[in-house]
Amino acid sequence: MKSSTKDQVKGKLHEMKGKVKEKAGQVTHNPNLAAEEQNEKRAGKVQEKIGQIEKVFEK
Image (cartoon, rainbow, N blue to C red; front, side, top):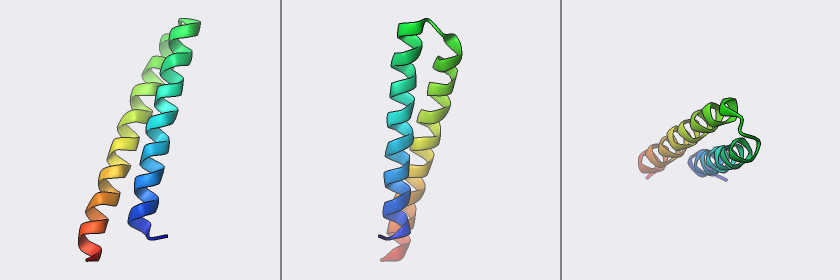
């Protein structure tokens, strides 16, 4: 698997982890999980964009 594809997959996984933390925070009324959720989503989006950029330069 190319590194660009790996970065895109890892980015999606970070975003999914963020969504899970968001739901867990809502259920438990834990504001700390909400903050972690935002960080996970941001990290996921950044990593996904890195994968997209790498894919452009591989061509």
